Image (cartoon, rainbow, N blue to C red; front, side):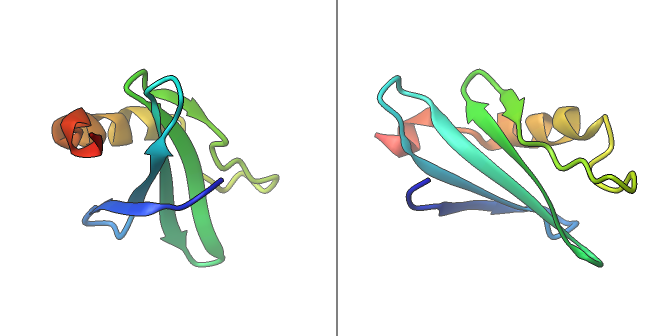
Length: 85
């Protein structure tokens, strides 16, 4: 997994961090939102916005289906690929 670096904190206390630039030029973003019993989490590859590892709990808890669109919008508004170079 490697190092994680802070990117942003959203008003709902969701933390978005990122890893190092990968060989193909992409960056893996990590999204974690605190909840009563721990964290909801997901990963997103930029700049393609491919989502993976989205929290889905057996009891139905976890991120709602609309979550990727919500956080994609936040990341699109702040993502600046030049900060990684």
